[in-house]
Image (tube, rainbow, N blue to C red):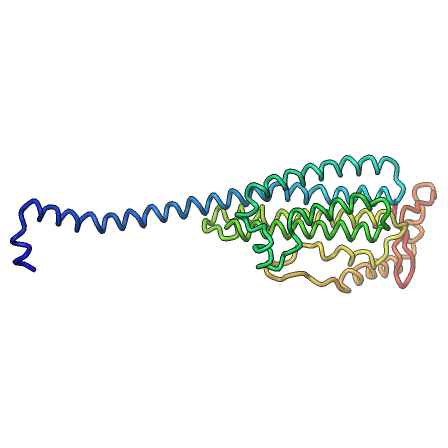
Length: 287
């Protein structure tokens, strides 16, 4: 080998030395460019996930509002049908935007039959969810309140599942940078959850406000909306709220002047804006 190298011309030796120097540099350059391209592709997929999420977030805002107007329309409130029709038009526009985005990048985010089937989300194609909305919009005035509310909740759940799928397939959920990870967590996880909770509060609150009485059974209906401890999962609703309400009633029962003072306002005018019922007595709330 040494003899062979010695017999080479100077130009050949220089050429061979150059090859040995260039070869590892070329490999390092290739690996460097590949890593940069991977980071660029990762960021581009995150951008596509954000692009797909925008119309879904809009739907997550509009559908609970439509549910509220639909409930008011079923209760016979004036102008509710007109407001419901305007909200339905906005939802149609949001679904149209979602279809356009799905046509552009839906396949890349695995919003296909095969991609959704891998995660057991076969019923969450844009066309399927849009068809469910059209059916709800047409049947809405004919539905009873419970069925109307359930169909709206099913639609909201479908939109949230699509947001989750977009996050899973667009690398958003895998963001390695700490600062942008918290931003992703806010938009992909916390914001949809907050929107869902606000919608539940709106629906439960409106139902409670229509009741003539506030009972100890009412607080548990919304107690699951409180913020749970991190990692604790859903918190059970139990007797804590009922005991608290019963405790207030017990306190008022032990105050002889409480029922009289709360039953009448200044000048002895009955208030009657609401009552708390317990196993001991009925307490009229100041109004």
